[in-house]
Length: 144
Length: 496
Image (cartoon, rainbow over all chains, first blue to last red; front, top):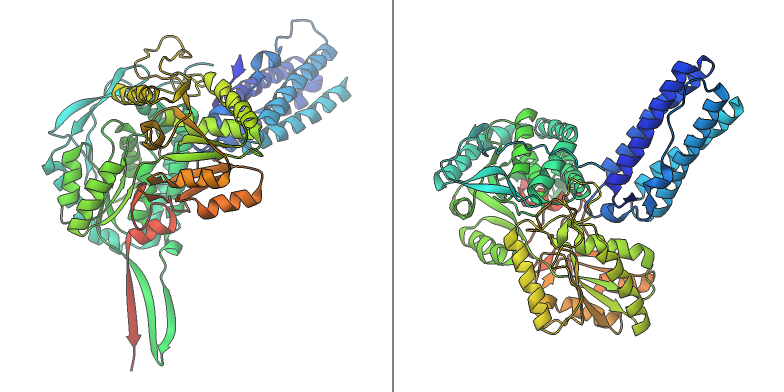
């Protein structure tokens, strides 16, 4: 599905954050060795939602191109896999988390890129989140 | 993406808010329809003369105490209102979409702009200060103080049901006046929501009143001796020939912000990638129903640039997704009602008859999401070869119709823009600072855009306008609103 509007982009970002938070909460229950870090990621996801919504609701205006800001973003390119079958190893879980983070980083980076000349505050928030999630990828890889 | 939940359920009967009470009107009830679904979502009264008189009386009775309430205490009510508006941000935004049809992005933008006016008005203890000078003659000092005047009438249009009364009301009450607001009877729900929050915020009874209705209410305001002034936003004929004229006859203060025919001048050196989305928002945002909308696209440059640029504009406009505004993917909602759609269609027919080239025909809403009646929907329409003698080239259409014209250079483009009777919000798109300055310097427009398609002044600047776009002296918003709602009293004192 192609995103048209800022409202859609923010809702999609929220969906990714919520889904991935559930994924990490699930991992935290299943893998004691990574519990702390997985829970911290889930918590941070909620902060990401708050930051994105704050940026959007703080600057949205009838004068800004809210309905025309996110041309070319197809959500099919950013679908994330959050189902981890029973009996998978901790390493499998970490690899899955890395793959998930890479998809989400790509969404935030692409969405920021197409919209930054129009709705400046929202793409800036997206870029900040992409940066934080890139750091997550390094952390996850260090646990492998 | 799912359709967002509608906050208005059932078919409520709207009451007036007078003297801190919700009062049932004795007037005839008319339907308020959601234009996307053609469903009745409320019934609004056409209030009687007695009811507007009662509201003015309540406001007049509240004035002495409110006037002597300290500015700090007054703005504490506004601080509470601001917090309540933030708490209900999404709800009031969705109400706008439900009653007006605009997209949810546009409604949220309107909510934000409205709240910003409340925020600015909370600065009244500073904004309302006068000034002084010692020793204008030896031992004699002179100073100016600003005092409220009494009851003000605020008359809102249909296109921004939430925001536009907030261009005036927060400043009026913060400076110590009381208000009677008449929302458009087509979209009364947003002002009802605000009044509910005003009530919760603890404004004293009678400071903020809302009376629904039509001409009877407007006439009641214009004729009532206790109304000190009127802030009006609406069409030029009504603003000029009724509101401005009659306020002049009865000695009321008046500001009347009216229609427009805004030129978007495209220079060949503009950043095309950034300009196109700005133009989509300008011409087709709010379905073209705003006085800041671009209406004439004036392309400067040779045929090659003209053709390339216009091809991009047409291609993008043809893909605008039309639908219900609570569907987050919708880029353009319906026009407010079928009569407005018919009027727009008449303009399109007129453009065809006058010889303009119909480059994009939006009369049939082909991009409409399934399940919605096409009653109030249109696609974007684009005409080429439009000249100022055509109706579509000179009159305000108030719909998603772009009229394209060409100019050989900037000078000709400015002359074209200045030939319009209106002067609300012309804009230029260029990367050349000298051309931008030349445009800003010479163009006859109260608001000027440079690489900005919707020149909507922030709450701390006046919403300017000139020629047939504005009648009065001081505008809404910011310091000009503070001056409009106050009397400047000058004191000269000598203590012997």
